[in-house]
Image (cartoon, rainbow, N blue to C red; front, side):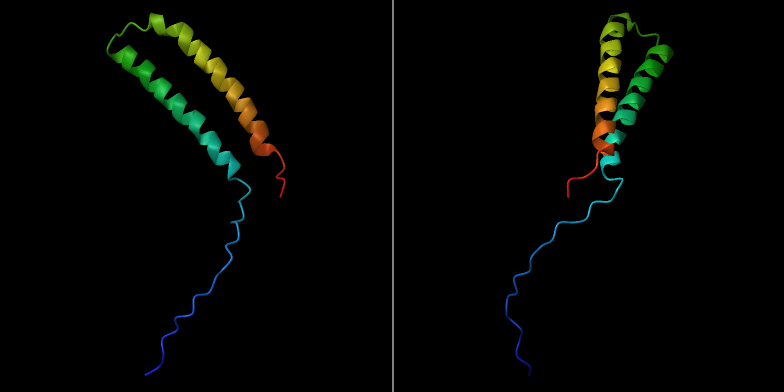
Length: 82
């Protein structure tokens, strides 16, 4: 019988190389929030819900999402440091 190889080898883990589009995957959050907003509007139209109290907060959220989109685009397009 052959002896078992029980020597433990310490291997150095190298960091994974990031793909060029990996930062752009974070931008997929914003369209999903937009889809949820559209579902809210469709539900309000179908079931005749009164969403007049939500108009100002929704406009504030849309402005905030636009600012977040611009910041995330600058972050995603920035050159990597490594």
